[in-house]
Image 1 (tube, rainbow, N blue to C red):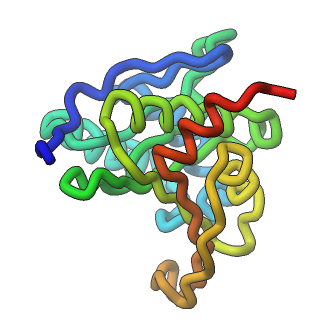
Image 2 (image 1 turned 180 degrees about the horizontal axis):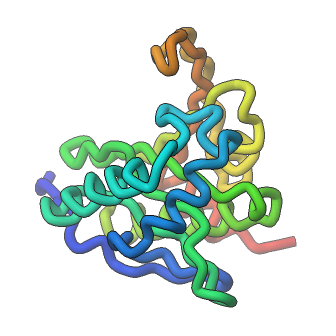
Length: 193
């Protein structure tokens, strides 16, 4: 099997969203959602205490772009061109054609189907352009909203990994979800009822 590489982090679109590369000019928007304690409450990263925290995340992401690593997209609302979150691959194993997806969204936009729309678009890119076979996603058990996104995009619950991560001074259980390319193709081909 040929070794694949990730090239260019192309801009992606949905009905309501533009998924695009982050730029350093996004620092205020990233800080706006990153500084809300509820957004990273069940994430591996800490609340942003200053604009420098947002810039550090963006600079890390810019480095991933330069290395053509599977990186992060900013989630932008088409209606007002406002950056409201991010989505991307936490890691990518191109040899085994699998990756883990992660995302964050500003709290005023929770519950509107925005993240489901963004995840569906990234899955399409991952399976069609990157030719990945498996996409994983996980969440802390208390973050059931994230779990609902995973379910809505067709991911299957694979189990609970007990005390898998040591984050923010404690061990956390993790709920594991995944979708295979074959699952996604089957879901895509099924007629809507």
